[in-house]
Length: 348
Ligand code: 1HN
Image (cartoon, rainbow, N blue to C red; front, top):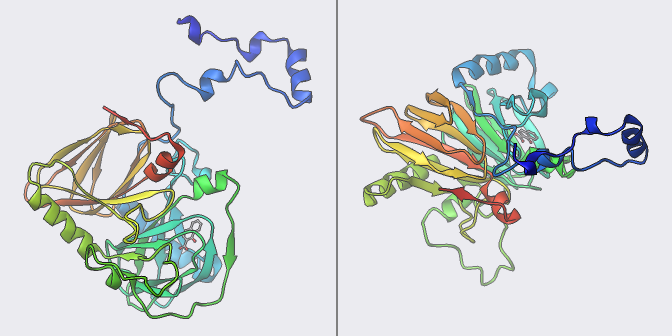
């Protein structure tokens, strides 16, 4: 064994000595040093995990029968990564995922909290989320933001169950001991729709008479616009293997939220894309089509509405199984957080 790795263990030390240390709230570093600082790359708890929608949906609908919305506030089944322990409710170190069900006529009351959230609509029509007074309709593939501190509530005027994927940075906000919520009254809807104001690329309202602009000017990113952007990108750059857009703040061009990054990706018919190992963990949710996601020795067969996650520092290969139709993914990762912390890496 490399002498550098050969450090003393706790068992090498006299029991009385270890107890004396503990009685003064002291711990020797060397038995734990390799654990907290492993050689060459981290050893993530996050395991490559696949959650099939066909497994989730019946159990979620059953939750709808078992638990009225008033008893749940948010009726959610959490997509928990077994590598972290199911009780930790983590998909990765910083990412929380949940599938939420809202039935016709139900209302999930207004609250705000420190974690940032987004919703990716999976199925059903007629539901809406009101965020900071703006009523955001929910349709399949739409992305709706509820950033830190903004009031939000969900309602449903339609006739069929609506399901969406919640993505939050709850694990990191909880770890930082900064997680809390405040309940509020039903919001009064105010006029103005960010998705319309910013619907024309490259044109933003002049703020001459408005002091400052909202930190989150656009709260709803409609799927038809994202899908059209991907198709155009693919046609205009036929040689480019990666067809991906980043959901950005239209005023600043930066990631829509502070901690997690959100993207939409298209695979051309039959395409295989090799994604390099990068430090952030990444979530893949298949909006449309059929695709395989290979993460180290694991290969997941995804159909529409399936979700999987990959740990950081791991190359991922995605393949469109259809030779005639494109495949569309929604992605979430920890890249904005890693960049801010100065630990972001891409490994060739
Ligand atoms: C939350 O506020 C929502 O507003 C969903 O729909 C899931 C998970 C943890 C903490 C807050 C929502 C959540 C959540």
